[in-house]
Length: 71
Image 1: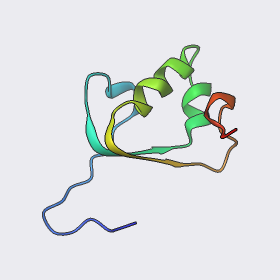
Image 2: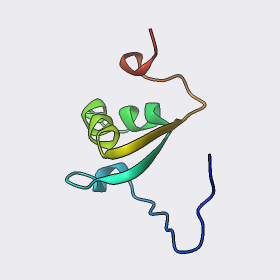
Image 3: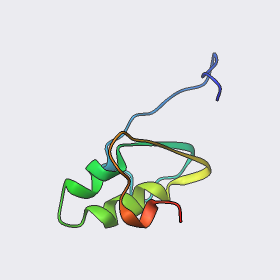
Image 4: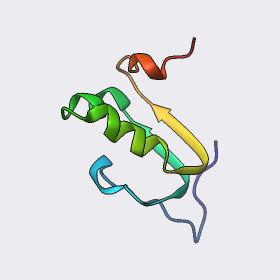
């Protein structure tokens, strides 16, 4: 893990505003809350998870949705 240095930026966006965008590193906070927020929440979470080009980090206290849990 590394901190953002001078000249780097962090962009915070809601899950609803990510379709069509890509980012080097995506941090997803509480994936279960995204799936629970709407009827098509699993689809929304899929879009969020696929925005990462290089790195994806999941931060959660609640249990992950079943399809995201490691086997």
